[in-house]
Image (cartoon, rainbow, N blue to C red):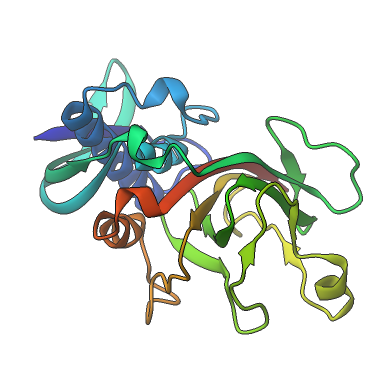
Length: 246
C-alpha cells in the first residue's frame, strides 16, 4: 500500500488536489518497489509533484493499481487531500538502455535565445521544444497537466514519426511548421492564476503508436501501462517541467 498527499490552497481545486495526491501515492509506490528515491531527481515546483511521478518512469512503471481510500483531512492546521492505493509496479533496469539516451531536452519561448532550467511562461506564450539524443530514435512528445492528464503532441496528423539521426538537434515545431500555422501555446486553466505542467519525451528505436484511441481522456497510468509492455532497451525518456502564469 502507498499513500499520497496534496495540499489544498488558493490555486488548487479539489479535483486537482485529488489528482496530485494520487500521483504522489504512485510515486511512493514506485519508490518502494524500486528502492530508489524518486523525488530527489525530479522537477518539483512549489510542492507540486506531477513531475515526480513522471520522473518515476526511469525507475519503475505502475501496471495495475487499486484505489483503497481517498478524501480530505486536516494535518497540523493544513487541509490536505490523502489517497491510498495498492499498486503493482514493474521495476526498470537503467543498465538495459546504455546505448540510447536523451542528451538534451529544453522548452523555451520561440523568441528567446536561452532555455532556463526552470522555465516560467505567461499565458498564451508560444513555445518550442529542442531535443538531442544518442542513437537514431523516434521522438514521441506528450504534454502532462498538473492534474495528470496526458495529451500526445507528437506524432500528430500534421507531423509523422521519423527517426532523428543520432546527435542531430530536433526542434518541435520547426519554422516550416510554424509558418504553416502549427504553433504550441501554453495556457493556465481559467480558474487558476498559475499552473505547473510537464513535457515528457519518449524516444523509441521503433515507431510506436502510443495511446491509440485516447485523445482526450489519457492518463499517466495509461502511458505507463503501455511502456511496461515494451522491451526496456527499446526506449528512453526525459522530463521538462515549466510554470504558466496569468
